[in-house]
Every structure is written in C-alpha cells, then in structure tokens.
Length: 183
Length: 212
Image (cartoon, rainbow over all chains, first blue to last red; front, side):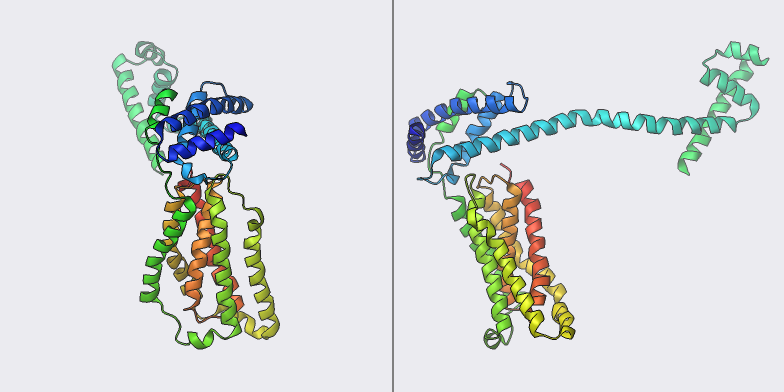
C-alpha cells in the first residue's frame, strides 16, 4: 500500500510531464509485472519464453490507457486489472496461434481418406470401360509398373503396339475421368 | 525490443493522460447526435399533435420509458469503459427498464379489449420504426465506439452492448416524439426489437473493435 501510494505519486508526476519520475515508475512496474507474468504464465502451463513480451505489453498498456485511471482512485487494483487483461489476451492469442499451427495438418488428415477411395473407384470404373487390349496394357504398365518390353512379351504384341495401346488407353482414361468429374 | 529501451521510449512520452473515457463518451454522444438530429429534421418531425398528445398517459409513458432507458444506459457506460469499473447496483438498471415496460404492457392489456390487442401491437408503421430507430442510433453508435477505443474495457463485448443500448435508447427518445403509435404493446415489441438488435450489434462490434 505504501508502494502503491508512491507509484500513484510518480504517476501523477509523470502525467504532469516529469519524465524522470515516470521512468522510475515504469522501471518499478516492469519488476512488478515480470513477477506477475512469470507466475501467470506458469499457472497456465506456459514457458517463461514469453515473459518479457508480456511485460512489455503490460507496460505499454499502462502508458496508453493511463487516462482510465482516475486520480484519487487506488492504483493497485487498476494495475492489477491491466495486467490481468493483458495476461488473458496474451494467452488467448497464444492459443489461437497454436490452433493455426495445427489447422492445415488437420485439413490434410481429414481430406486424404475422404478423397482417395472415391478417386480410386473412379479410376477403376474408367479403366474397366476401356477396350480389352488397352485395358490390359494400361493395367500392366500404369498400375503394376511393368516395363513395355515385358508387357509386349506377356501379351504377345510388338513393343510399338504396346506403346500405342498404352498412350491411347491413357488418353481414353483421361477423357473418361474428366467426363465423370464434370458430371 | 529490449524492455529498458521501451522504458526510455515511454518515459520520453510522459505528459498529460488526456480526457477520461467517460468525458470522451459525453463529447462523442453529443457529436454523434448531430447526424441523428439532421435525419430527424429531414425525414421525420415531431408529430403534429405532440403538444396535445404529450398529456395523454400513453405518450407520457412512451417518452418516460425511452428516457429512463437512455438515462440507465448513460449511467452504465462509464464503469464499462474503465478496467476497474464495477457496475455494482447499476447492473439492475436494464431490469428496471424492462420492468417498467412490462408494467406498461400489463396495464395496457387490462384497459383495452382483447380485440384491440393485435391492432395496437401491429400499429401503423412497425417497419418504419424498425428502420428509423437504428438509423437515428447510428451516429451516436459510431461516435461512442470510437471514443470507447480510448477506454480499457475488461469485457469488450459487454461494453459494446452498452454502447448499442445507449445509442438505441437515445434514438428511441427522438423517434417517440414522431411515432404515432402510442400503445405500450407497440413500444415493447418494435422499439424493443430495435433496441435489442442494436445492443446485440454493439456486442458484436465491441468484441472486435474494443480489444486493446
């Protein structure tokens, strides 16, 4: 309370334009706020990394909002209210940043299983609708990853015929998939 | 930035704190009413029979209720602007306004026949009331929001709601001198909707613009 009265005096002097008194007040408040910030952040399971940021936010708020302190009103509760608001504000913004960091990842997690089965099924349907020769070639090369020569041997075709069938099959597949996307 | 550097920088800005937010709000309310008064003079006007009508109980009640709402809102605002502001007993003021209106509604229901209830409620110009009242409130609303940005509200949405309530109540006083519908049923319904809507808008806007 004694300290509070001294701070109130310094505040009054500062508002009257005394920069030295005002600096003394702010330096004392920095110590006070540092203790508050450390305790406040610890209570909410936050590390001490942000303590100095929070202290500066509190000091800046005292400076910017000093018109909301009525001379004659006790300074302690006013300072406590400013500090509490800034602590909560800080925690809230921390919380939002954490959410932002998780969000894109969540989207991927949610989107991947939903899209793929549908896509696979579309491809399978389109593939099944190709002519038998093209279908066999595209399956062997595109799906199973076989070489052109080995496919040619297996199907009893020339390398050139396999190549042509593969490209025609892929082109037909693409048309069908785009067609099904549009509908 | 190093905290010591911040201290130096802030110390260099030592000087007058400026007017209290409550005082700023008074100035803002006065300034914000200028567009409202212009709108009132251009688009509205006191009803022709105001001098006579003012002596009738319904008009007296209507104006009293609007004035009580405006005064209650004005009393609520200063504590909503300061971080240490405590509403205390003032927190009951909105209920007082609500109780007053409810009393008027009950009395009206008792004195007019049931067949007149609906026409009294619907009135002549409900839609006009719903658009005019918020329009009249807009000037004070914006000016008070700007003034309140100098304050340090602990709960910005509540302070915003108070601003919406105050600007709408002041608008209601103005509008009541024009509106030909005097039944408390009309007042409770349409004025009520308009004032609550502005209060809600204030809460939403306050949440965004009154953070500090």
